[in-house]
Image 1: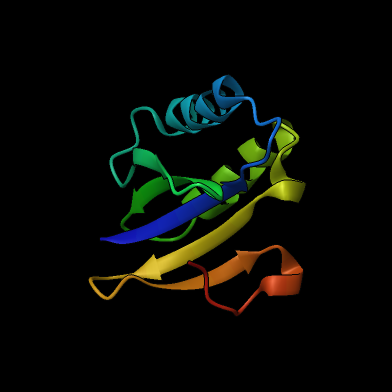
Image 2: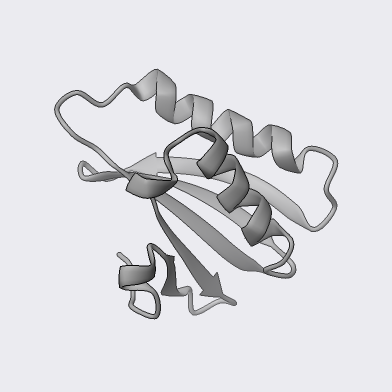
Length: 103
């Protein structure tokens, strides 16, 4: 299965309840979807990562970007795609990083 990864940078004033709210909003967006699952999150000290398992990129990618926009966190987010078992990440947002790789 492929994966969409949403990363939000962490800072001194990060509101962790807000980060969980973002994950919950993505869960609600995909509730009942058979080809999409929000599989969890992790913290690495620099960023909060949310993992979305998908069978196909669309419409899941567009839906995730819409949710991030509605929550007004899209501008600070990095969104990447990871295909198959190799999990090599390709950044699709922000445009300035599109095509690059993510951590």
